[in-house]
Image 1 (cartoon, helix red, strand yellow):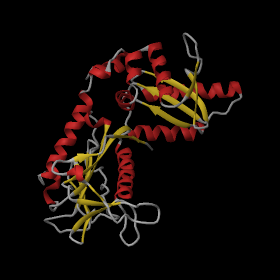
Image 2 (cartoon, one colour):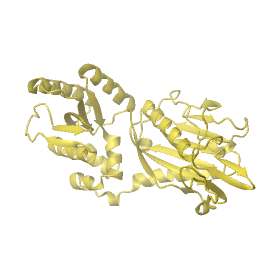
Image 3 (cartoon, rainbow, N blue to C red):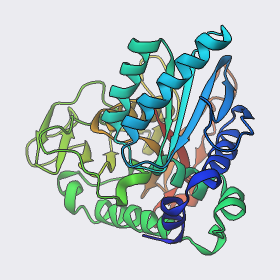
Image 4 (tube, rainbow, N blue to C red):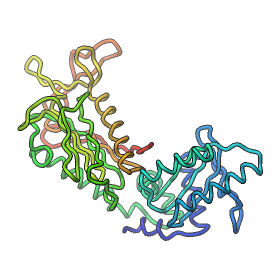
Length: 349
C-alpha cells in the first residue's frame, strides 16, 4: 500500500465528506454542500450532472452496500418532504467496489427508486487522483503525487515487458508471423490489485482488424483469440484478455504490399476495409465492455504501438475526397517500438 492508498483508506468523518464533494466537482458535477454538522439530514450534497439532478452521499463504512441502501431511503424521504423528483443518486466511498457489484446496485436503485446511481469508489478515485487531480490529493489528503510515481511506473513496466515479448515473438506472440505489427494494449488501473476475474468467466477478446475471431481458447487465467489468417502453428493476429484485466491485441494484417512498398491503411476506404482508427475504436469499445462484465471499473490506460514499421507508408486522405499520392512514412518508428502517448479511458457500464 503506497502513501496515497493509505491516506484514502484512513480518512474519516467530515474530512472525507469534504474530500468527496471536492472530488465530485473535479469530475464535472455542480455541487451544493449541505453545510450541516452532525447528522446529515438526508444529504451531504445536492448535485447536478448532464441535466440530471439529485443527491450525493459519502461513506467510509466497510459495509458500503448496507450504507448505500440506508442513504437511498433518506434521499427518498427527502424527495417526498421537498416535493421534488430526483433522477440522480451519487455515492462516494473509499471502499473496494467490484464491477458486478456496481452493476447490481445500479439495477437495484433504478428498480426501487427510478434514479440513476453513480458510485465513485476506491480504485476509480485512486486513478483519478494520480492522473488528473494531483492538486486535490495534496490539498485534502496531504500527499504530494509529484513524488509518488510508483504506480504508473509499474504499469509502464508491464507494458514494456509485453512489447518486448511481441518483438521477440515470445509468450502470447509466439505464433504471430514476422513483420511489422500494430499492437493495442488496454490496462485497467486496478491491474495491480488483488481483484481477479474467475477462471472460466473471461470472454473471448476482440482481435484488431478482425470482424470475427476464428476461435478463442480459455486458458484458465486468460483467454486468447486468433484472427482468420494463419493456421494452427502461425497466425496473422491475436488478442488476449487476462484475469487481472490486461488486454493485448497484435496484428500484422494491418499492412499490405503494393508496388514493392508496405502500406498501413489509416482510415476506412471502400474495397479496402476498416483502417487503423476504426479498428482500434471497435476493439477498445468491446474490451471496455468485457472489462466491465468481468468486474473491473474506474479508469484504464490505453496504448497503440507500431512495431518494426520504419519502412511503412501510412495511407491518409489529403481531404475528404482524395488519398495522398505522397503518403507519410513512419520514419520515427524505425528499430525500437514506439507508442502513442498514454491515454486514459473510463470503464463504464
